[in-house]
View 1 (cartoon, rainbow, N blue to C red):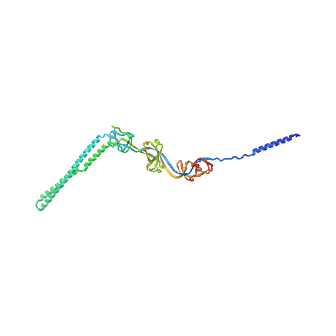
View 2 (cartoon, rainbow, N blue to C red):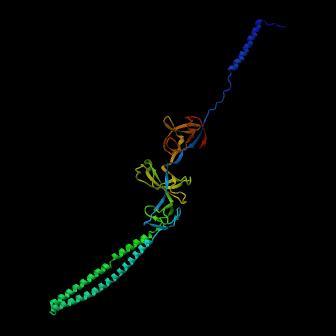
View 3 (cartoon, rainbow, N blue to C red):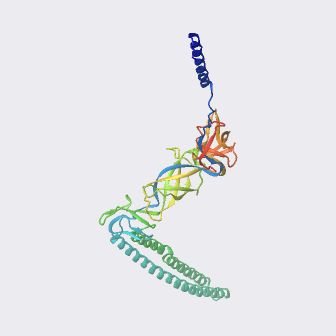
Length: 404
């Protein structure tokens, strides 16, 4: 049998439906989903193990290259150029003839001096022989006269001759001795070495002047200048020939007072001549001036180096790398690993998967590597990339460098 629902029943049913809907909606609003897994973020870093290194600080200076032997050849006697036997660029050995001067007058002077010397030698020889003969003759004559005087004295004592005869004999001996003494003295002057020596000196001077008309290379090298021409006068006012030895060259530099005491004589240096090659060659500190240049207040250095191929020319510029500080076998890391935080010098090392800050004491800094005096241990994994992005305890991941 069908039952009819009144108005009151309908209201009750509607209320129950709304309640059911609200219950389900409330459950939907208040129910919680499963918790999501949140992974902690990390900072990618590169590391380098702290280790032993040799650190050096250098200074690079530029200087002009000069030949180790630059010689200006000047004739010792002025004269008209008779011949020129070399050109610029020619290699010459010591003693090679470079040019000659007109030697007509010089040759005549030499011949005259030689004739005088020969004459003086002949006169000296003749005077020497005459002196010896005169000495021999004088010795014999004087000996005979002295014997005769001795006999006269004996006869005088025996009363056989008068006093006048004895005196005349004595006077004759003295006159004979005086005559020979005068002759010998004159001959000794003629036979003395002084006149012959004077002639020898004059001859030597004339020979030297004639030899100087032929101008030779005082050293081995390469002809760098030729300033004479045939027919022109060559004098001491200008170098006639320039020679340079390009086998060994040097560069002159100057350093400040804060560097000069860090350098030592014979210390090896690196030299680069950009106009010739980008490759370094080995040079050495030839000398260090003990005093500064009064104009610049800098201390001059001489850096020498070999030039076996002759490609490096005087006048070029060289870059010289001087080692000013050096420390061997010290603990060091990359300079960029060091950061300043809260007025402290620190580096970050990786321990496990965390960044740990360590305060350090630093020493020599080359700009690439820096010495660590205190605060690190050998093989500590120091962050060298990403160090400015991490903090104490921050999770990191090694993605480069000494990752093992």
